[in-house]
Length: 296
Image (cartoon, rainbow, N blue to C red; front, side, top):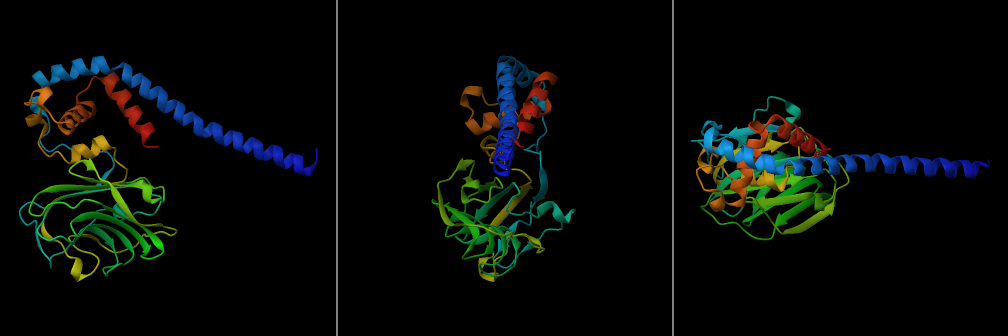
């Protein structure tokens, strides 16, 4: 066999092996989805029974907990006057350190009194500096992953502005793809249409700056209003999970609402709580298996 033919054979073998390796997880995921779908009637019956009996014992402050690495409640002293900034004391330094290929979700409850302000950031505290920044800019939720503002960054913003003096949940997910399309912004659980301001990220935006709430990006970008809850996940949460983050009514209260009168987000929160904590073992294991495959 000539050298060129041997090289071609080796190349084709590698391609076929790679394709097979990629196909197998997809087949496993499809099988897991099919297996879980077959459990739906049993799941419906079990949940309905649980709602009538043991739902009153549900955890009051439950929310999505898998891959949660930072959670800060700012009850009471949650007001930001354009000068206040909270440097978050991290138990583990790497918990909030992300690069261009890391999946993450940032979420915060905000009540802005001004149209522009930093919500959650980790980066150089100057305008258009390096790092990551969840912002409110001209009333629009904005996410920036920046090495160089002009030519090495992913920067997107929601097309619609939010209202002032009202509580909103602002959540951003990123799939680690290195592309602007991997960023999604949700307001009050609803996916937003996005304007892409920059789509060329080539380098890592990792840095050793503090994680900041209410500041970052220079003094002119301090937050004004209230922030009462910040969460960071080392995963790109699903739309259903984001809907749960935007629904802070306890499960114990939600189950008092007749099923036909619940919002989609309320129904998702009850269902995900039940799947995580109270579903029959066979259903819970099937659900956990499905989640593991989806998060790979």
